[in-house]
View (cartoon, rainbow, N blue to C red):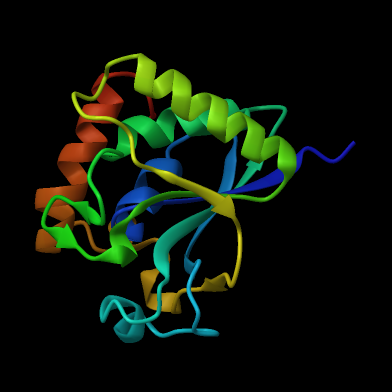
Length: 177
């Protein structure tokens, strides 16, 4: 039986999502990319312009016998604010929207259930607005985005945005070092 599966999430800047999921037991790799837009193989500059319709995403390869899709969804809900439309902190635009791109009908079902459960948990004051849509028009981001936080820990965005998020999730036991 093949235990290797993929999940694709957008929750703001893909550097943040990548750094979070790289620290989840059972995750084999995390690939920053773009999904959901109209442009084929867009560049970072095009996506940042907001004109392509793409979201910055992380494609997560994981071993389902070590971490379930449901567990990844739980990390996703806590790793960003799923109640803000087209925004995460100071990152504003449709490319930073909260979105789950499902790879199968089972992932769609699980994501929809997880969203209802997360909303009912009252972890967030406002309602969750995360889109749940079929993965479409995905492409990998440029190579320099790969492993961004680990390769650039002293970059200001990493210090002031990513590190506090990782510290919080580590303290809560959601991710490991």
